[in-house]
Image 1 (tube, rainbow, N blue to C red):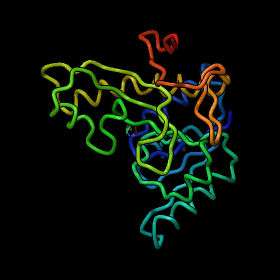
Image 2: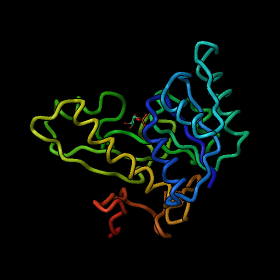
Image 3: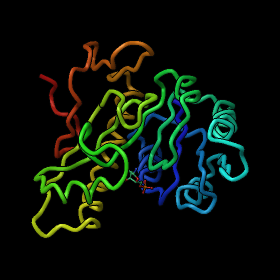
Image 4: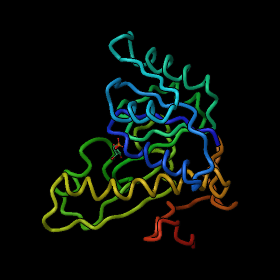
Length: 220
Ligand code: GRF
């Protein structure tokens, strides 16, 4: 499966995908990395791995639609089967979301539908929740609101800070994202425009759960 990754941050999730590709766990080719941040860790990691990088700066474009059109024209040229937003921090215009027709997924640091948007860890701590985590969902025109494919949970500890909780969640994001992509690449998980996601031929009625062994728990 040909994958393009969008990222704006440190790039730890991208590196998890590169590692999975290199050790054979992920039957994927990473055909490009797109970003809005020329100096971010994700761009440096992509370059170090010899992956084509497409960077544009929002200030060079009249508006969001023009920026997205340029970035997605570059991505389209490398013909990805799947676009993975892994710490991509810009809102996407409806035009590019529609043009990908359900072939774009996003990693989000909360158990959606709880805490869409920013500052998810601080909000979870402020609410005193006992369980937090990460989700991978299909990107739709509404922010963080597309069908959730899979989730990984972490406990919230009494003495947690924003940072300690973020670090615990990130530790589960890497195997979660790899498990989703492995399932898509092997055809266990299927995304089709206009149809609900399916797991082994059955429509997914609730998110897959990542077990401690980093595999999805049996869907019942
Ligand atoms: C992740 O926690 C992701 O959920 C959030 O941004 C972070 C990116 O981390 N949207 P990295 O750049 O992959 O290290």
